[in-house]
Image 1 (cartoon, rainbow, N blue to C red):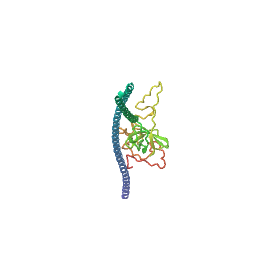
Image 2: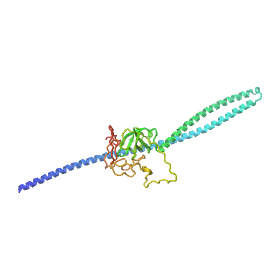
Image 3: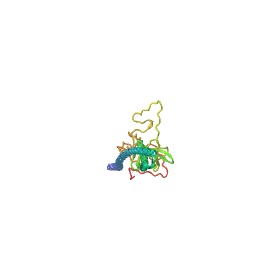
Length: 356
């Protein structure tokens, strides 16, 4: 009987030891998972802080750009005022020239009508000196008129350049001379960064095209602009099939689209309820970009606007529970097929995570 109890006791102890070992292994797995989640949460918090700082820097850059636009408006008004003054001075000089010519004609008429030249020698000499002086005055006035005319032409050219630039910025068109390239690609979030900014002529809200081997492979919509860099959304559905955006791809301004003429007698289409633009255009909130978790797009779904507002969830900043996306060119949206990367293509670094 004692042996039976001893055997039962040994069995119970063995089972207890086995269960304790299993529980210890599970506890270690839970500890490792919790440490991993805490590290991910810490990285996401750091990334959120850097994103907020970038938003504040973009807001300051926008205010500086608005101040510069105001200064240019004042310069344009001053140039227009100077042009009006020059035009008035030209008219005055032209009237003076006409008066001088009239005086010369009167003097010459009087000389012809003079009877005895010998008795009018003194008067003739005086009139001759006056004529010479008037001719010199006319030459000086004509020279000044030519200078003022050239100054007016130059001022009108400067005014035309200012007006063309203001019109291009108001129409959200980047400089036609812009030639830049992709600095980094964030396919998961649906945007790229460019190696040029407003100093090169990039304008917020303008459309750009990615060109490779002389062919347009994708369209971009500029979101935020800084002095020497910019961020642009990838227009959904514009990426060429079986193509991956790569660092170094050329970027040029999109050709302006002429507005289509309305058909005679046809009623204008009203926008769909909810703010959707006709013809499949993006809603007022920006481009719809799928969130990192692969769910439905967040309402208003774009990347943060240039005004520096707080970005909506899923619009370029992952939720704290989401994983950190892997950096690199050509990332595909969650759930979409990812084309194979070209041989020798190097992944782009994440500007929000320099340590990755």
